[in-house]
Length: 289
Length: 246
Ligand SMILES: Nc1ncnc2c1ncn2[C@@H]1O[C@H](COP(=O)(O)OP(=O)(O)O)[C@@H](O)[C@H]1O
Ligand SMILES: [Mg+2]
Image (cartoon, rainbow over all chains, first blue to last red; front, side):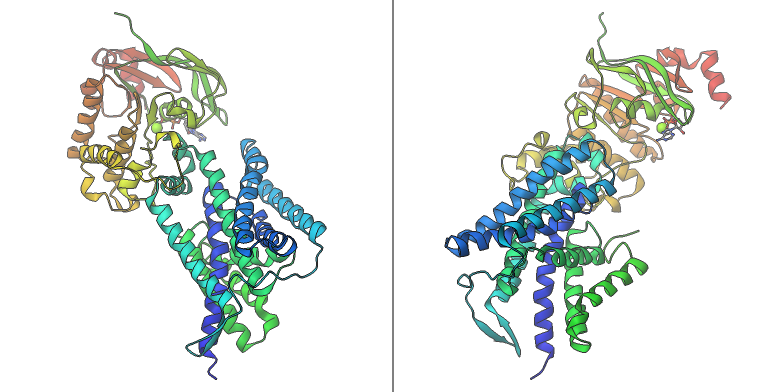
């Protein structure tokens, strides 16, 4: 069997997950302008909402998924309103914001562990089935195909949203020059609140999909966040579609890397890529300056 | 005739590391007139506009908008007070198209019925009007960052026009423009005046100031040096000295 098609498939699937995480992360970073670590925990919140509804209470899995996405979105919105917005109002520095979001991350993760224990869990498999497909010499599961397709859909919807809607244009204006956006009358606080909802919902979906693919633990958000952030930095922080390219590059380098070296090196490879970029091109592939 | 002041400062003060950029300044901007503000470099013209638009907080003193005393102006309130401004160093939404730079301000105070609302043909027509006024309609799909310096200045003016504000604060809108572009901007100022809008015009070129402004304010080191009718003020000895001594 030829390994190349499998490596490409794995790269695309990993890249799709990282891309989703990076999309939401960049959306939040480009408007609120700080590194939102708490964002990572919302992936676990989404996944555990599905677990709670579909596995503990036997709701249909699809209901769980929709609820998981919405709960993650609302929680992100609420955290922004009661923590980050208050801090912004007091002109908190980026370091303070970073530490506050680290606190949010730790707290959410702890709450999940208290209610659901730290044990590894799986999500019901009825939604996407357990199908296995052979595509061009590679083997992929139905969940993985769903991941790829949903990532494409989210990217397209987001592109349409940012470039065509009033709200999307306001988001781009804020990411370009927040002060001027305010002067021209854009309600930046309201826009940022809604961006937190959208970004957090995307994080929730990414967590749910990872949960279907490989299972869930309360700490699952951490590695997802790291990969999303690396993808974002590689593509150019705050550059929403640069992050997608960064994610694909990261997924590819990781998967080809572990084939040539070995699986334990996956995170080391990711960080090597990060360090290379931080040294030689800290602004990422797509940002200037 | 009763003159109404739409903007007023009372002992407004701002210092930066020991420099009094605006020094206990009290002045009035009259409604429906073009008020020119001149003064040597560093005399506090830009800082004054920054104070009036809440972009820098004042140390002391007050700003009155339509006779209403405000303890604090925040940038987000500027539009609510019917004001808008341009910047000496042009500030556009660089990564957005020329058209989107205008469309994005044509949203009613950021109120969206839904997340998925589009700009309508009504907004598009408004954008077309202001972009044609500055001759940039043909460039509407260019990214703002790809425009020439002069075009960027014109786009910023178009964006301010699109907001339909009653008071426009223009910080050196003519600086560095080619003569034909200067003509365009002068035409816009005259049109605004004929529509009864209030214009605050910061400008170095005395010919332009004489030609366009009804009232002139001369600043020097953050203080009011002189004010009155432009031709009269410009012939005063202390004003001439402030410039020659620059
Ligand atoms: N953000 C700032 N930080 C420090 N000093 C400033 C700042 N803005 C203006 N100044 C100082 O305030 C004074 C007035 O500047 P400015 O308002 O730009 O004058 P003008 O627009 O008349 O040329 C200058 O001495 C300038 O150096
Ligand atoms: Mg100036």
